[in-house]
Length: 137
Image (cartoon, rainbow, N blue to C red; front, side):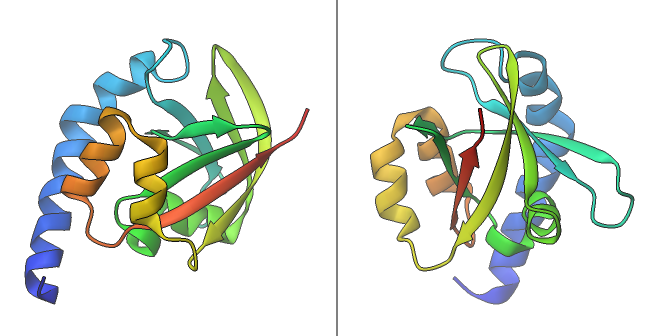
């Protein structure tokens, strides 16, 4: 995919997510089984909490996800700057430390995670990147 096409695709996906998908999904994220979780990061410029619905899977004490746009995603830039995050799942918040894993195969990870979100990330993603969040008690 050319750089110009990738940029256009990302711009379209960003607008759709910001104004259509995310406002709806945020209402159920982290509350309804099978729905995305809510990831809270600290804004790298403002220091304010920023919440984004993300899909992924809890494996042991780690939450795994694949970012559609990798390091171009604002929430990924934020968690790189401040890896301490919170994840809301099953109606409660859990603290964690995020790790960006550029050497992990995001396509293989999406196959392992399965589900509707993984299919959407494969279809809409432009620069896939695996992220592991190690959750604390």
